[in-house]
Length: 139
Image (cartoon, rainbow, N blue to C red; front, top):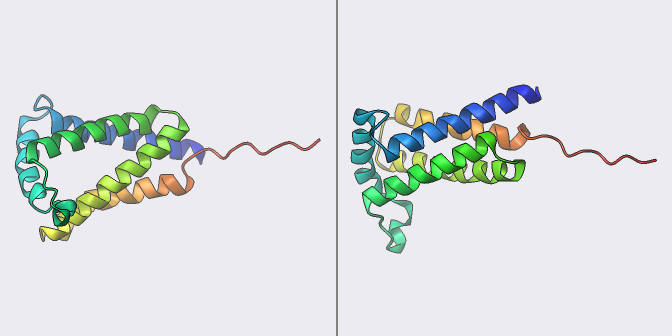
């Protein structure tokens, strides 16, 4: 069972690495990158901290989320356990923010499905996906 969780962790980390790279560059897919740029204009309008007077510039918002996904995806896939757990938490917060944003924008529920699935898998890894600490041996 541990191998299945390890595979899930690596695949999920690589997925976030890829989605972050799509946000940062048009080299992988110019069409998807353009879609992300236009989507983040709308996302910045409903940014959760807007109520406190913080409204990010859409391009900077896109780049920050992209870099965070690249770094945390890489660490989730290949980092030491502590950094995997921190990355999992950060990515979970990003997915909660994505779901919130899509709901506030009144997007169809099907648009929330990818973020919801990713959040569910991250929470699954958080609950059961890391090696058990070694039990002390009593002699």
